[in-house]
Length: 184
Image (tube, rainbow, N blue to C red; front, side, top):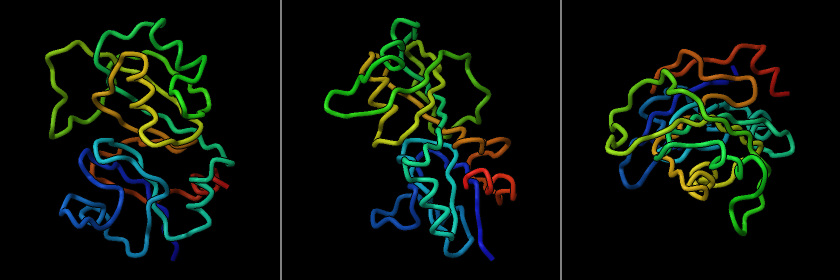
């Protein structure tokens, strides 16, 4: 049987099954044998990670030619304004790194699960919804920092039409047939 999983990767968990340094990995949460993550979230990012044991499915998810948009919620340090986020929408803000333009908007604080290591609370913060059409290393963090809004918490909430939904950190579920077909 082929497996397709949606997983809510908690903060401070590696997007892999082993780690020589002894950090928390997917093996502490996923007991389905033979599945691999389609893409990654860095150690300090949370949210939707898709896993499967079907290589062609994984390739369709991570290949930029298929352009599956990835939606993130970013808590940033500072009071974001439209003028501050405009460069992310209208031009490339990362010198030396060619990226596609992103969609970004200021949003109210979303109803996310609290994380074990809370965001430091001594500065005002804002929340942004950011949609990327590619995935460069630390792209959201680098883009927000480039406009003076360092990212404090980053949660991927969707890949294409697949949403995190009601999953809580550390939970996973099998994808439905319709969700799998949406990536073909």
